[in-house]
Image (cartoon, rainbow, N blue to C red; front, side, top):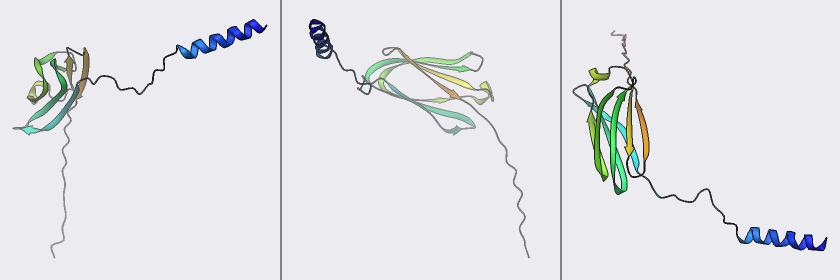
Length: 131
């Protein structure tokens, strides 16, 4: 019985001695950061800006697809910190949604943005007392 106690203590000691703690909040190597934002209209056509921030040079593929999967535009860019503006022809996609896929070659990651357009018309009638 005494041998089992010594063996159990030895097993527990080896378990703690050779275990490696892994913390969930350890910082991983930073990947690229993407940001797609609407910056306004030019001649009634929407303009978007895509910011690609990375500490190392990477190759990106940007693809615009409609909601049916048809490719409207695709291009590759290479660099560390890129900023690209895109003017979309509103008649090309109307009120359907668009998916913008940003794929990084080095980190093998993909980010997808969805663009939804909607129109609303507001008619306002104001009555003022004149006299």
